[in-house]
Image (cartoon, rainbow, N blue to C red; front, side):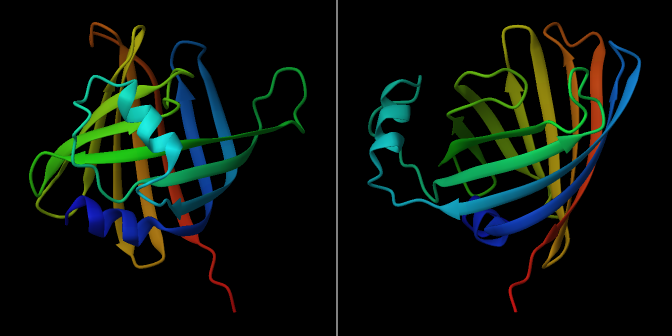
Length: 178
């Protein structure tokens, strides 16, 4: 698996069911999400701006940029249990070689500001993503069970890596348009 294959296989609309365990708050959370992943044109001005504002050189060879949008309903919304969380981010892969590289994200997974992550693929095609934030480290794994089903797990650690703050597991099923 390489990043182009991974992005191509991820495009589309997904229904996600995620269970999370917040060790910091001693709380379980169930989240249902609608996720849409669309390919972006490499000349997109938001992509050029994100690269300019990153630590990557301006001549970075990025490929397969995409946009991810989501709407999520959680059973752990303290103020309003019917509240829907939504958002989007642009993700720009910059391969180092066939199985590893960097990702620029307009919004991070654990903290809401631009993030730079490193990625790699295991021999079985599992995508491993690690992002170092100011307050935490996020590690994600995404793997395809079949063409239309994928799984995702994540662990959020303290910035020193000494303690686990949160863990989650999601199964995601592609919406097939008939």
